[in-house]
Image (cartoon, rainbow, N blue to C red; front, side, top):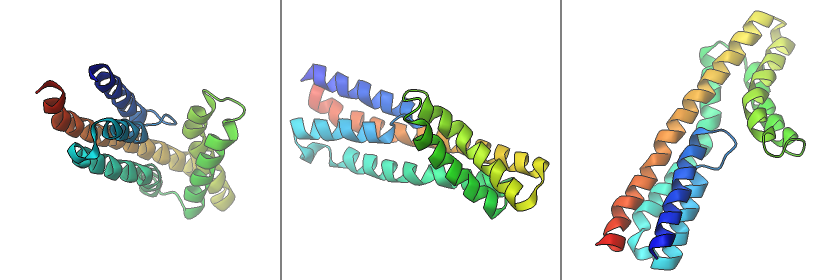
Length: 170
């Protein structure tokens, strides 16, 4: 039982790292680890960490898009640049997945929105300087979003430890 507990905590720590690193599973790994513990020990003791993990997972799903959108808006990107960034994100992640299964999605997540915003702005205004400014805004917004996701991912792990530690060691 102790070995499983520490294995699941290790998975959760990998989930925290994954929350900060694009294209790696983050909050979903934490949720899966908590569910596994619930299946083994019973869900009556872990309903609070489970609920926190679900809320964090749902929040993280929206943060990626909202952070990129806010960064684009602050940098003065037009709707074309914002749409280009979202299309670039999707094409970058899923388009490079088959070509580069390990580095492809990560590379696509970083480069896709940048190139998409540049292309979108160039199609709309044909101003290279404004296109690059929009792309940088999207990149900065995405990085800020990753930091927020990292901080949020720590919360369910701490709640899980606080809730289960007395069960395991008490």
